[in-house]
Structures are given as C-alpha cells and as structure tokens.
Length: 289
Image 1 (spheres, one colour):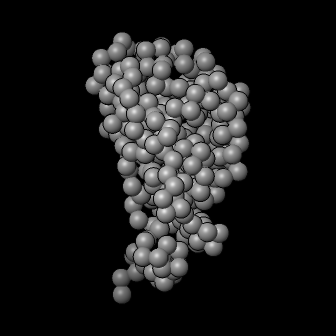
Image 2: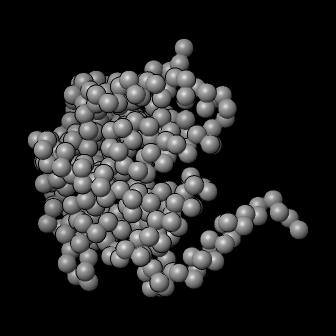
C-alpha cells in the first residue's frame, strides 16, 4: 500500500464535506474555486481607470446584499470556518480556502477598517466610489507608458515582472454586509501595492513578510494566520532571516504607517512612488546585510 500521499485527516474532512454540502449551501459546494467576476460597473477616468458605480454593487434579489453574495447562517458559517481553516493550514496555497476563512473570521476587523476609512477623506471617497482594480478597470498598457518612478509605472513593472494579474483576486461571497464586503474586496485588490511600496518580492518569504505587515496594518485574522503559519514552508535559513531581520523591520515601520486602504491609488498613478510612500508613511524594507 502506497502511503506517501495518505493523509487521514484530509480524507476524513473530504468525507465530512461531502456529507455537509447540502446542509451548508444546498447543492452548492462552499469549497469551489471562487468566482473572479467584476462586481461594479463604472465610467472611464484618467489612464483608462474605471471608477465604481456604488449603486450597481447593492442587490436585493433572493436575499443578496451584493451581486456575488451567498447568504449563510451561523451554523453554515461555522462549518465554512472550520473547513476552510483545516484546508488552509494543510495547504497554504489553497487561496480559495484562505479567502473563505478571511470572510468568515474578519467581521470585527472589517468593521474597524470601515470606520477608519469613513473617518479619512481619501478613504471615504473610496467607499463612496467603490473603485475596482482589475483588467476591466485599469489599462496596464497605459500605465506602462508612464514615466519611470511613478506609482502607475512601478505597479505595471512589478505585475509584469512577476507575471501577476489583478484578475486573480477572488470575489467576496460570504460576508453578509455589502459595505464590509467591499472593504474586504478592496483589501484583496490592493495587496500587490503592499509588495510595491515595501519593495518585497512575491517569493514565499516575501509573502510572509507582507503578511506580517498587513497583520499590523489591518488586523485581519487571515493575515495573522498567514504570518504565523506561512514560515512552515520556508527553509531553516529563510526562517532565521525572517525572525532575525524582516520581522523586526516590519515592527519598526508598520505601527506608524497609514492604513493602505485609505490610499486612492487610481488617482495617484502619475505621482512618484516615493511620494506615495511618504504619504502612507511606508518604507522599503531593506534586505539583510
């Protein structure tokens, strides 16, 4: 018997999931790959950026609060939380599980983030306009023609170099409040800006460092989970580098930083990246000497 890939917990969980699918969401599997559809429609702005139409975000049919909303009760959310936590810990690369876990555990943090945005002039505008960052709203070719050193050009170069698309961010589904769901959606879509502003690569080590920063900046439980358990995938040398250099650097810079969700990136494409860093009180995290 080949036991190389045998994992009893995973097998048991798979059986439990098949039995509880109908309990949780009828015939809908809560652990499918999350949709990547656009939630907002809007009008053209500078550099082919489409700002959101907040009225199109809200939906009232079938008990939905927004277009991709999947209403769930307390018991259903409990099952989703336990299941997604198990799978996210077993396989940190299951981004769909991490997304579900973030939605079912982050309500208190999202409420605090929403208040912070409402009390900030730029953040309040974002909540009003509900802009999206994806290939339908941002013309990456246009950003690539901006002057070197600008936010838009640096964002374009970062995404191109790392072969990343903003369309890879999953749509929110299990948050039962439309305003809080948008805050979570915005967090997902600005994640790559943390990398740009901090100068961190998209390697596993870079992702863990960014998760430590996001934990302090947003206090979202899913970020803390990634910060604490992400290092298990690192080599001992990289874990030592993380503990001895990067985490102290994050704690030196992050507590004094502005909330990045309050940055209206779509209106700052032509600004120097260093100016955006200055405004958000962020710094490039240096490499260890």
